[in-house]
Figure 1 (cartoon, rainbow, N blue to C red):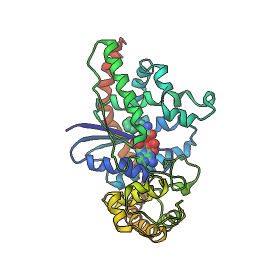
Figure 2 (figure 1 turned 135 degrees about the vertical axis):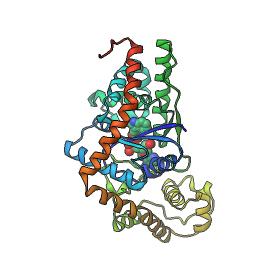
Figure 3 (figure 1 turned 90 degrees about the vertical axis):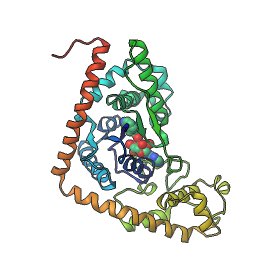
Amino acid sequence: MARIFSGIQPTGIAHLGNYLGAIQNWVKLQAENECIFCLVDLHAITVAQDPKALRAQTLQNAAILIACGIDPERQILFHQSAVHAHARLAWIFNCVARVGWLNRMTQFKDKAGKDREAVSTGLYVYPNLMAADIHAYHATLVPVGDDQRQHLELANDIAEKFNHDYGVDFFPRIEPLILAETARVMSLRDGLKKMSKSDASEQSRIQLTDDADTIALKIRRAKTDPEPLPDNIEALQPRPEAANLVGMYAAMTNQTSAAVLQQFAGSGFGPFKEKLAEVLIAHIAPITKAANDLLAEPVYLESILQAGARRAAAIANPIVDEAERIVGFLPRG
Ligand code: AMP
Ligand code: TRP
């Protein structure tokens, strides 16, 4: 049994990319592993957040995770800010990671855009905090979407340098778990951009709280090209929007994109989109309903996260205490 850690930012509402790239895998992995799932609110404030919205979205995403099948009784589900070990270890890692390493992070470059001088220093050291999230638990498996691959390589570099500098074998290597087929779900408006919570247009993503009409409308309006669907995968390559919709259908119906094309070759996007909307609605409607039921009892939901945080702290505190001892800090007493 391995210990698994993963996180999701409560910066908006979880979407189909989160579901197919990460959450779906988390639900499967719980059967045979010890899992720790975290709403990473410390990461969320690396960009501006409205406090009221942040609180609401933390609860809403917790409800969505449980509705998707995460079991907060058997596994640990909590909000990052409630366990101080994350911030304590992140500080140590800020002093281990090199500026040159962070300068190579493509997600920082993307998020900072042209105005790199104006973003928060938190956004810059974001990957160090992410490394701390994982290493505070000595977790070894990390299920994520493809966009997190580089951050996980950095987490290994940090652990290796810490171990080397202090002459210890304290932090283990971590393995990313990235699902090949659904590692990158793309925007409905632009097949070259990933589906993201921070995209200004809600039309670009299916949120796990969207009702049937909204899903049907977003899929109907999704960008496509005028050609009918081809009969082979190679022909999809220069057609990113078509490839994305076919990939979604494949993931929702548990088959390969090639099998989907066999079924729909020669069909126009009208009828295909109708079928795609149908499978999405059938899958998402029960999640939305279960999440709304949970959200009707916010105090209960908060108590689930607080209980999770106590269990998380019981694992992380001794590990981070030991890291502080290795570094040379006197005991807190
Ligand atoms: P985030 O929404 O950035 O907090 O991401 C939470 C998890 O969902 C991470 O494991 C991401 O890699 C994954 N993820 C986010 N967006 C996508 C996407 N468009 N396709 C696949 N996985 C994604
Ligand atoms: N950075 C991740 C994302 O945006 C979220 C995250 C924070 C995470 N800490 C983590 C994922 C630790 C895996 C492990 O998707």
